[in-house]
Length: 144
Image (cartoon, rainbow, N blue to C red):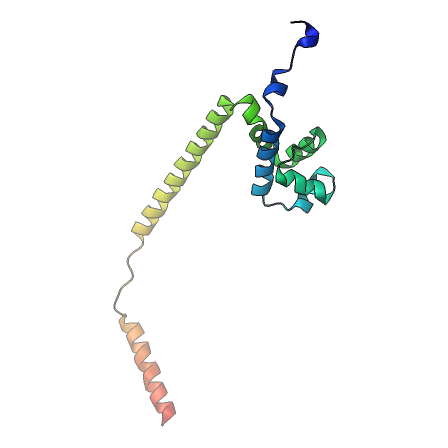
């Protein structure tokens, strides 16, 4: 195979419909309207509608979308072509584990705090009962 005949392996596997559908899913999931998407990519509202419908973004549009949504957007859209990034997945998993551990620790602290609070008495205290009696007595005097 000569150099002229070499084919970019990404272009063979990068089905534009797949990339467009993945970008569209992300855009719809973000909650942005077609008009808002159009503003992000500096295009017409019709372009925003087409992007939401699954038309693949141009390189310039992809650049603007990645600037807005970040690297996770690019990874999500192109993952179908390049496959999952094992290192990124491992880092995400570690992050999730750390968050879960912090939540479990804070939950344990809340449980300890709840255990330290004395239970509320179910019967009214003498002071509360005395107050109720005085209010009732005053109300009877007003009615007379």
